[in-house]
Amino acid sequence: MFGRRSDGVELKTMPAEFKLMPMLMKERSDSQVFFNQDVPISAIEEYISKKNEEGIRITLIDVVFAGIVRILGQRPALNRFAKNGRAYQRNGITICMSIKKSLTDEGEETTIKVPFTGKENLFEIKDKLQKMIAENKAQENENGTDKTADFLSKIPTGILKAIVGFLVHLDNKGRLPKKIIEISPFHTSAFVTNVGSLGIDSIYHHIYNFGTTSLFFAVGKKKKSYVFEDDEVVKEKCVNLAFVGDERICDGYYYAHSFKMLTRYLRHPELLEKTLDEELAEKEKLNV
View 1 (cartoon, rainbow, N blue to C red):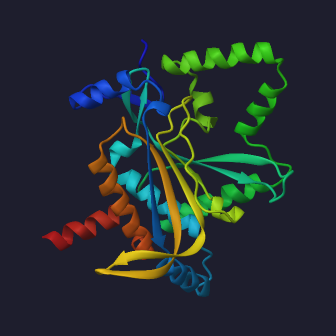
View 2: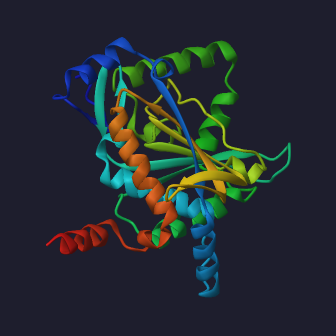
């Protein structure tokens, strides 16, 4: 039956505007919203230094990943996607990130796709992320995404166009094979790019029409910026976090509250040492 997908469950009951939006705005390019914020990182850098002294290697991108995973675990509407006039709740949480095997013009680029439950703590997330980055940076290694792209690139252009058109058709109808979805970087909860590692500030990266990605985060280089804090404007070391999202999955209030939660985690990375279950249990205890 068309509409029944392997990667999500169709949402049958939604507010009227969200029922109509996927029909009125058929592509993600029709429904992109843009947001950016300078996030102070002094607390993250102090935390990283403290953990290094304890023999635990943590990076800025580990903390950003952990913050995004944590809000996806608590804010289910962020983990939705719109396809072919319908809205879906995604079955699981995955985050994709592009990495260069070497920082040169000729360096090959690959994409990793990391699955999460949304309940992991920072250390579990950083172990999984750092392991996948190390494995995929090796020049001799090719993941499923690389092998598929390499295979398709050898097909004559006319035939390849027909194959890609057929895959787009299957995706629109909810019939794209599960194995393709599992390796596709276009079918993911969120995409993160660390352009700060290239020495540039954050960018607004489009969300792809093909696939189901609803959220795209770009982390810029470290810089000094003015932020409003405790009724004062102060100069702090920051990174700019730029975001492009699909407005068909949730409203502005929901996005804003989610970003505030993410900023809180980035300002207090020690909160991410607990699993989501531990954090929620502690909150419940404090409210009693």
